[in-house]
Length: 257
Ligand code: NDP
Image (cartoon, rainbow, N blue to C red):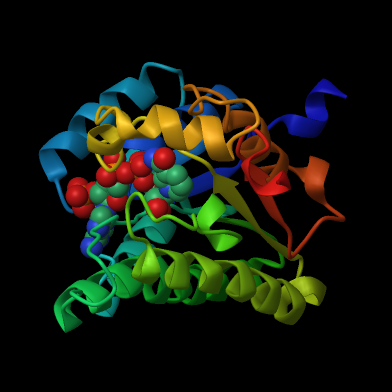
């Protein structure tokens, strides 16, 4: 049973691994024995994360990548494949949370949020998917959100672009899962509620969050570090060999009411 969740001998690529949840995901994969490639735009932060991942006893390869640039994605995937020889696991995590009331959002803000949170998830899956199809094996874990499923009626912070993108991630997950099911690839998604990170610390520290969590979240609190690890390792390992196309919300019950 313990081996069911082992990632020894596997190679994972985590996008957006210079801060927040991406760092936690890279370390969780390493603790299960996977070698890990990490990418993002801020190379100095990636170098620090690389050291922390290597301290867990696995190999780590860091590569600069702006996921809004498809050429950089192709180049990154090529570099990771040539460094490790394969890519077994992709955690499609890079994302942004820029927000404004729907009536005020600029074209640029809409394109940045949907481009990073949805378009890039597809572009990364497409490029890594080619490697996985060639190898007949792959586990793709897309990072959605509770906003893949719901928004909040009195919009404490507006989420039109973010929810449109994350809702798209849910359907993209199903579509890729269905297309690649017979090619040895599973595609699933995690829908976190609110966890402390660069993206959310202003919201979580604003005081407004407590009232929102009390109204919308049965557990009445944000997620804690480590509470996404179980879902990640399940989807990244052979424990989920017959599970594909699923969005698992890890949200303290937020999407149940
Ligand atoms: P952070 O802001 O801490 O991390 C975002 C990561 O994405 C950074 O590593 C950043 O790296 C990277 N990134 C952003 N834009 C780009 C880009 N154009 N190219 C490459 N990398 C990029 O936020 P979180 O850790 O909170 O977010 C991680 C994921 O989790 C996101 O998809 C987010 O939507 C999702 N999520 C987060 C929740 C939360 O409560 N924290 C809840 C639900 C979902 P760099 O700037 O170095 O490029």
